[in-house]
Length: 389
Ligand SMILES: [Ca+2]
Ligand SMILES: [Cu+2]
Image (tube, rainbow, N blue to C red; front, side):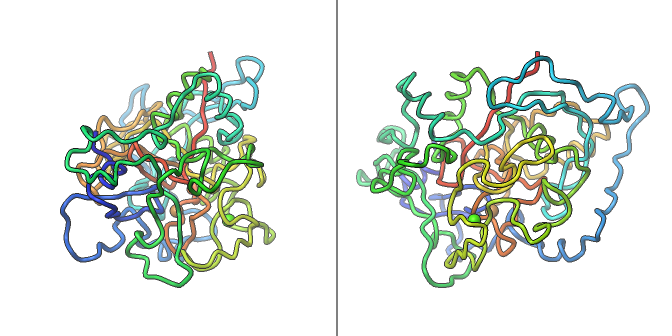
């Protein structure tokens, strides 16, 4: 059971490459003594890509499709399905269909490729503290962040590191180079979903905020109780785009249409000075910003959301090379992140309140995050889906 948190526990906090984009990537494994620059999965080339983006999205390279029924291009209109019944509480019907999946800005989100997803129900909002509390009351579930790490799971760990806790954004109050996120992420003893910033903090009056410090298995446990499941990455992105075709944002072409903030992101100077022009320095109550075309809130910004897919940086290239229309992709069979080989990660989607074009910009539709299943932070949460039959 080696994981990011485990690496911290076992070896003391040595944080990896792109904590902001992915949650937290610690590593206690031997690595070069030099600070590691932001890797390909982080912010490289975002500004250039943005500058090069025309008023209309570039036409993606069409994936060549062999003839045959499977390769037939079906319009989203034709395969979209109506809701199979009354909407479950707090969910909306996502009609399904065929769409372009990808993003210009990020190497791991290229190339654009055609994907079909079936219709499904989706939570309108991220799962809230109030909802999670109901689950915990009903099941007495204890999240990973609340469990004291067992020495046998972390051989060689100093005893003082074997404490329950989680990772909290704790920025310096002065500008720093963006090559070492040790500077803004700390493993905080006693941080968990009830104590988002550490033992002194609480979720009093934050019932409608997204629950955070949720590890992948915590999300699965909640899903089982709620009789729902995590979305696949493709389902999340289909839903995020709200029927729009290859737009950079879940709401369209402009980041701030009419000068209005459409998502909870980071303004100011990252990470030291958050001017919170959008009204929120950290997570915002769910549905504080307008919904997208499908009636979904916070599909960009606020908190990252778990999906069920394993993360591979080259998954889209593999799919595109197969040259067929991909139906209901479930992600690759294994995980690989070149910035941390050997560390298995799940895909996060949507970006968070820490996303800014100065650093990771993954509030952009189609952006991909990643994180180890055992690790939650105070900017990772989740929402769930349910099949339509
Ligand atoms: Ca904000
Ligand atoms: Cu980010």
